[in-house]
Image (cartoon, rainbow, N blue to C red; front, side, top):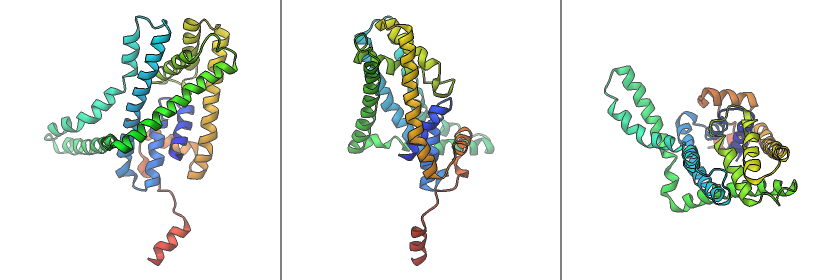
Length: 274
């Protein structure tokens, strides 16, 4: 949970979706064998991406059924939302491709062997779907989280007195738009693009004034960033990390240099007795 909290904080304050590798860094550090488990933890992020795609498809279906703004552009939007599928294909097929190319020079062979081993460990993170019980729990929890976000978008419309123009369908359209435009964010928290997506949806499809739509986008993102800070800052303190530490490791992609989380004195005493 603390890895998730820190990941949310980093996504809200850094561009390029660095929250995901930040979460992987923290979880790997917790396990104490970062070099071995980091690729597997990254594999679980691939699993989460698949569930996010399912959620986006549901939101997109609701959006397309309630608004004509994207009429004629449904295919382009869906293809854009499905872009992460390319990552899944890479994870699944890359080890086999690298195996075929592993007979070249010794240095190249060593590099390919290391890459192939890392990708196989990443693929291991997808094994949750082979266990129906765990897979269904993970799927249900992830979709429920999207449901909470959808409800939050709608409640903000109600709070601003815009629900008579834009209801649950508009909330789904906003959530879909801000997430699709955040696939490759150029700014921290996708500032600017986030608000532009809200204005495009609410003004173009639901006839909300541009001023109200812009205010909605600003408040919605402020709530998002405030939530990230409330959850993430205490988690950083508990983990004994600073924002700069996590940022540096996420950018470098090398969590192996972060020491394992210090064990309690009680645990060390028990080990000494044994």
